[in-house]
Structure formats: structure tokens, C-alpha cells
Length: 610
Image (tube, rainbow, N blue to C red; front, side):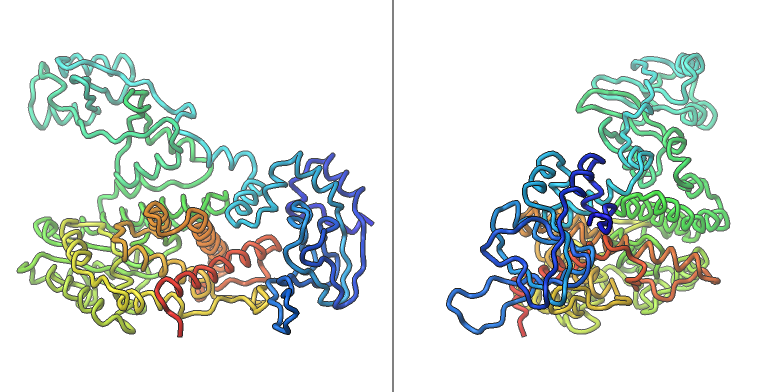
């Protein structure tokens, strides 16, 4: 009997060899006619049923009053699916399970199930109907040991250097000798209870450019605004921080105690076998051509990260930081230095949220100081957009780019636009406002952006009608599930319309209502949970669902790009279901149920019925 059982399917593949042997020798098999009830609500389950052939529906318990109201079917189970596990563990079924057609099932008896659950925590956890738990188990199950070490490596993983420390009063000459003796490329100077850092470059500039005498106290040239990490922080996060801050060293602190220094070169060396890190190329670019070469290497980096199974949130954080640095660097190269303090470049949409991995299209704008006189501004910004296109950032189909004068505004006009969009909150105004509230400054003077954002949040129309109109867009697209809870389409579905957009926009609306400054959807979810506007479990489920949608989309985008002659993907949001394995389809179905539930939550919260 057990020869037809696929032991490689989750959760059974989580069992040890001995546990799998026990499972196989304990299996029974049963046949059910069409319409036959396999497990009745309120009754006991024989164990876990694994479908070999056929289809089974799970439906609500029939009404006690004997009314003829049709029972609601929640989901259909097909070949290789299992059901009845929780009913067996709890001792009582809460739903009916009925054979929709002639069905053959393997049955794992309850007594054996309980033995396996008690001895294997991962196997037990998988029966929890919780997408976050399932996704984490699948991720752990799929990753090899090297990948686990890669993602879980801590700053303390042998990369922390013991720092060379000198006290205030040490001369430049003395410090230089010590650095040579200890073969150190930087030194920490202790000044009271503070530490400052001096690099070889600092010494060179002090002696040659500033003509300071060698007897100068080294404390006078030290940099005291040091960025630190904990030894327990993930090494990958340290790399993200260095990329964001464009620095090459972090001070490692355990609470208030100095532990050491971690250097960018050591981190790059650690990760070199996994990805083609290009942050240094971006920082060292001295021309548009050098910067373009670095930008065009990003797809190789993405491919490497994806192939190694790096979690999508880590990938998004790193790529958002790199894309921001590319735009900021190009801005520095193209915008006259005397104009940069008076203008601010902002990115919007998925780039502003830090959720863009493969480049989709440009969504950017410029806010400039009221009364600024710069005759060549629009011409320069048109060239800026053109160069971004050459760098691999496609033009926006809606023309939401700085090459379009409508998205180049004085601070006064920018705040007026925000006010007008909020006042109208119809059609294009909703989408324009949604794009704008995801804005993030990447170059120029960020104070201009912050002034506009803060003004808008202070003057936001805080009434039910506004948020009802604004939030309604999250319900614009149907969730691609059948009435019976299965994936509606057999061939393909638009994951942006069906899954990503409802979560992103619904969370955006809630974040705007509570003046959450974060633009990243995951960060907004965390903030809303902390504010008590989302339950912790609901927030975790929404975050896991969104990460799954993005990850499935990314994998298929990469597949299409590899097969494309022109390196373009005409259907970036399309998920081809036949390319998903059974576990991915199950997780996708679970995630879409979370979206459907969230849309109901929004409907009730903002009174969106009708």
C-alpha cells in the first residue's frame, strides 16, 4: 500500500528516516464514493487523510436547526493534499470533509500521528494553519547548510578586528608609527568617554592638504559621529548599512562596550563566493560612464542573490540602497553644485517603498525651493531621465518622471498638489496621492521633501469620507480564488492586482491615517502593529504573504529575462501557475486567503460596502 505514497512531500519529508519508516508501515488505504462523508463535523477523525486520487471538500458544520441554508465550502483538496490532521490532534472535527468525486486516500492513524508530532517539533509546527510558520519551515527545508550559514552569519563571525586605540594627546607622528607597527589602516582615539576614528586618508589630508604639523593632537582630526552595530547583528544587515551610509567601517559595540571594528573589505570577502557585490564600484565612479557600468551589473547581483535563496526582504533592502546610491551619484554628477542645496530628488512608488528588485519603471519627482531661478532646470532634468533610462531604469508609462514638468514643482506647488489630490480623491487623484505618499528623498536637499511631507500630514483631511475614498482602491481587483477557496486560474494570474496591490495600498491607507512616516510596507505593518491598529498575528501573516508574492514574481521574472532576446519582460506581474510546484501553489493559495481576509477587514474598517 505504501509504495504509492510520496514521502518527499512536505510535511512528511520533515521526518527522520526512522519516523518515515514508521509512517509507511502504519498507513492504511480507503475508498470513498462520490458524496460520501469522510469526516463529520463534531465527530472523531481516524487520523490524517492523504489523497491519492479524487477530490474532497471542507465545509462548515450543518446548522443545528435543520434549516435548508446551503453549507459554505471553504476549500477543495486534491491529489497529494492532506486533511484531518488538526481534527485528529484535537479529538474533534470542526468541519465536514466530503468526497466530491470517487476518492482514494491513505490514512495515517491518529495514534501514530500523535507519536510523530510529539517527537518532531517541525512536523508538529507544520500542521499549524499559519502561513508565516509554513513559509519559514519551507525556507529552512529548502536551503542547504551553506545558504543557512550565509544568511545567519553574525557580525561576530570571526570578522571583528581588534582596534588600535590611542588616547587623546597622541600626536599624528606617534599615531602613524603605531599604525605602521600594527599594520592597521585606522585608529580609534579615546577622548573622555567618546571614541573617534582616523583613517590613513585622514592622516594624509591633515599633513598634505591642511598642512598640520606632525605634533598635532590626533584627537583634533578624528571623526566622532561613528555608526555602530551589535556583534549579534546579521552581517548582511551590516553590508546594507555600509551601502546606505557609503562608509567602509562600522564600530562594533555591545551596549556601551567597544568590541572592535568590522571592515567592508572583510564583509565583501565573506560574501564574495555568493554574489557580485558592486557597492564599491558605485561609490568610486568618477564619471557617468563608470556609474553606468556599475548600474548595469545589478541584474547579475540580483540573479546571484535569488539563486542562493536570499530572503526577499534582505534583497529588497540591499537593492533599494544601491539604486538610491546610483541615482544620488548621477544627480551629483549632472546637477550643478550650486543648485543642489535648492532642489530635492525623490523616488516614489515601489522604489520609494524600497520594494523594487528588478527595475520596473521610473517614478520620480523634483521639489525645489520657492523662488528658485534656474533657467536650465527642465533641460537638465530631461537629460537626467534619459541617462537613467540608459542605466536600465525604464521610462514610466504614466510619464511620472522629472522629465515631465508636471512632476517638477516648487515646494508651494508640491504641497498644493497633495492638498488638491486629497480634496478630490477620485480617479487619477487617488493614484497620484498614493504614489506621492510613498516618496523618499535620495539626492539634493532632503529638508525640502520633509517640509512638504510634514505640512501635508498636519493638514490632512482626517475624516471618514476621505479615507473611505482613498482605501477603496485596495478593493479594485478581485482576489483570484474560486468560490470554494482554490486558485481560480489554472494557467496564470496577475499577482500585482490579485495579491500585492491590495496589501500595499490597504496598509498605505492605514499608515497615512496614523501618520506613519515609514514608506516600506513591511515597516508600515510593524508600525501599525506597534500602534495596536493591526494584531501581531495579522501583521505577520500580511508580511509573509507579501514577501511570498514578491518572491514568486521575482523568480518568474528572472526566468523570462534569461529566455528573452532583448532582456525585457513584457509581463512582469504574471505568475505562470504550471511553473510552481505543489508546495508553492499551496502557499500561494494560503496567502491569497490572507489577502481576501484583509480586504474584508478594510471593508468593515472604512465602511466600503456597496
